[in-house]
Image 1: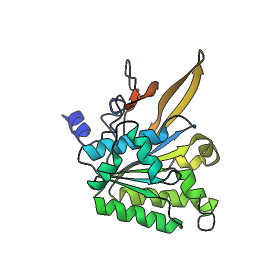
Image 2: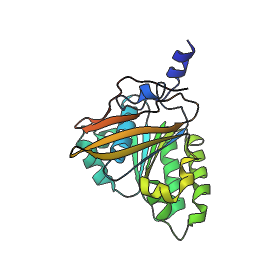
Image 3: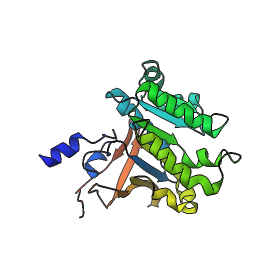
Image 4: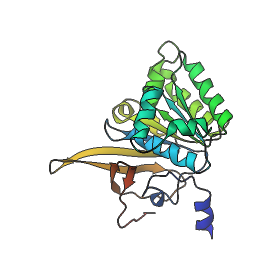
Length: 233
């Protein structure tokens, strides 16, 4: 009964194969860092997470710092996700970078409140923090990340995915300490073929898989292969 209650309280990711690795889904009102190299599909992961929520009664907001709204809509359409329709239905909001950091964060909060959002994706943290050198200095980034996480899980009432680059994380090691969880994506060449892998590096309050899992990105989005699932104490 306890396991059932825990699962019912979880936020399902909409990523086939992932939820069973984390006891049924993400903890509500938490933040998870999604890190990986170029080409590992971080943006696709975020879009799939938001689309699944929008189609299942959980509106979401995307803050896209680097890509414009037109590109996001086009990329989503390749996987059969009609973000424009979901926007018109008030199920998803897509925000682009504003001229000032404070305006960007204000717009994020305003949109989340307006939609009654339950999910949020920020793509990406490096672009967001380093894109406003006149407002946000590097020594302020840790404090800013704490404040952002508190905003997303508190006033915005969201369960959020924060996207980052693997290389940037090496320069900003504290980035992994602030969110409740860390998913790491990696691409490796195996027998001349690029294979993609996911590892759950940490997930507080959750007994999660400690294995490395193969995943693929198809025309339908992410699928994570989970043979012989085991969770270590």
